[in-house]
Length: 412
Image (cartoon, rainbow, N blue to C red; front, side, top):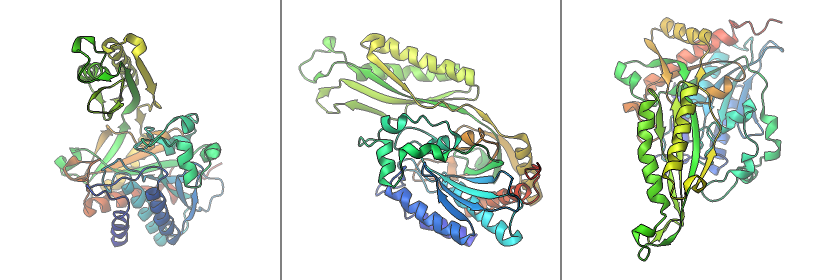
């Protein structure tokens, strides 16, 4: 695992922020540099390398079968601002390490294997989560390529052009079907660490829905407009947001997060004319999640200082709750048992690219613990011992799929 450790070390130098943590947004120079490093490592590992029309990076090991759908492993390479060096990156580097080891030990597989590094999973630049895998699954809203813009006003299409991609060709990134997809990821929570376990087998991923909400009001001078005469969207937005926890608690297992909020014109001595914020809804049951969304919208309309017309409600792609394939979950669990790694079944409260890959074929997912259960922060870390165990379990699963063809992908 020395080489794998050196890969992590090399990527730790890309996108580091002065205040701590990393930022690696989609279609940025940092992402280009990561893809350059990955391309070299993939080629040295015996893989042919291709960047698809959405900007996802693929490395492929050809199989003996010319008809079989490929076995894919990987994750994403983008990060939230101030995030760590393991979220997503673990699945890409760990997947590459597993595939390289299999090729060196057993030679050409029966079933083709691919390693993918997705762009835009976090949505940290354009507020569209799972963007790269949505493109592969054919579920990306292509109108968003010109409509969605980052904090500097750059559209997705223009950002793509800056790194040599044509947004008009993004449909070429669509894959019709996959044989199977396995993803290794840090847990991003405390369960495994508290249980003293190195591996968790994911059996389901919670459904997510995000919105951008704009409260409109009347801008004015902070010192001359009496409180009784104000139509202050910041006050209205604050009242609405304060009611969201009750909606979440009433749903049972749901959670609601307001992660970003900003005002226009964003000045200390001006009553804002508009206040915008994001809403992130999650629940394992789709119907309940939609009830939560309706309740949030109703609360916003009730608290608006201009009535229903004072609210602009912009939904992002809805990600349905996703169950893992029972056979693949069992395969990964058996791999852990044979390796002597105690593990447990668990659900994921975070969304992952696996959700989109489930539209194309069977999926399975594994977690390893992260220190203190912390993620999306500079303190995010994972031990090489746990990483090694995750990679070995992934490797064992890939062997069963690509060399033993337990899914019978090579049969007519």
